Length: 122
Image 1 (tube, rainbow, N blue to C red):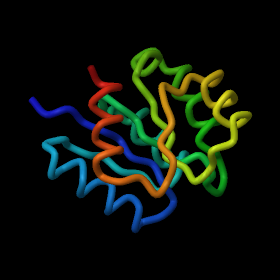
Image 2 (cartoon, rainbow, N blue to C red):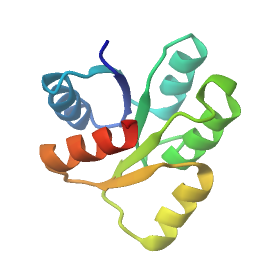
Image 3 (cartoon, rainbow, N blue to C red):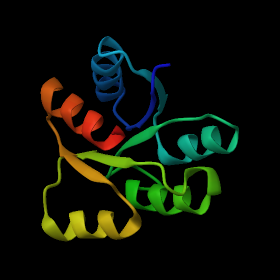
């Protein structure tokens, strides 16, 4: 059975691009254009094996999303990756403290994305 990856990004272009790469590699995807929409879907019963979220989004940011996800017992230990343009160590430390499993800097090649996803899922 294919693993499901939930993508959260306020850019429709990024969502489509990342989703396409993952689907071609055999993964299923779910998408949300912001953190609030993602939480609503997770609270509604959507299941995923991995969450990949943008860090900087209007409204609730990616770090706040992780903190909320970690409060939900079903997702307390789900791996979470950030996909962002930021590469500052202080932001990485903040994300790690919130419960992030890893970090991918945009723009990422399909190879980097897939290698990171496979590493985190195994």
